[in-house]
Length: 166
Image (cartoon, rainbow, N blue to C red; front, side):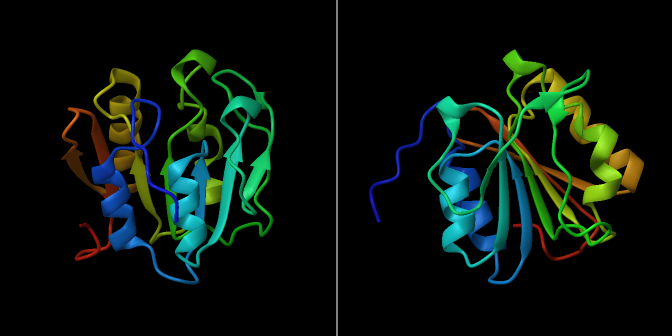
């Protein structure tokens, strides 16, 4: 595998390592945005879908689905293939703030989750992402654990599954 390069535009090394511990072959996973994390999901044997709206950030991956953003706040113009099945883990790392942020997830989250879905939200050191994490935790009664990366960024894990948080 080529060397991993972490920077301000990628997930942090700490988030990579946390996801590495959480992912299992056969998990059904969804990611908003694409990048290093997409490679990790693909190599973990997950049944993965990575949504990306911006060709500049699109990762070479068998799991990548390029779709435009729609609505206000914006969200990906995409429907999950198996209605009602839900995902085991959802990584929220897009769309970027410049595109309108991630609050559009609230319009579709009920179609994406099942009771045991774990959410991982990157960049919760930012106000909007922190608010989204709080709203998801409250809406679904999830436990929220914040993790600080060495570069002072924060990511949050939301789950109702005891013992599954790294």
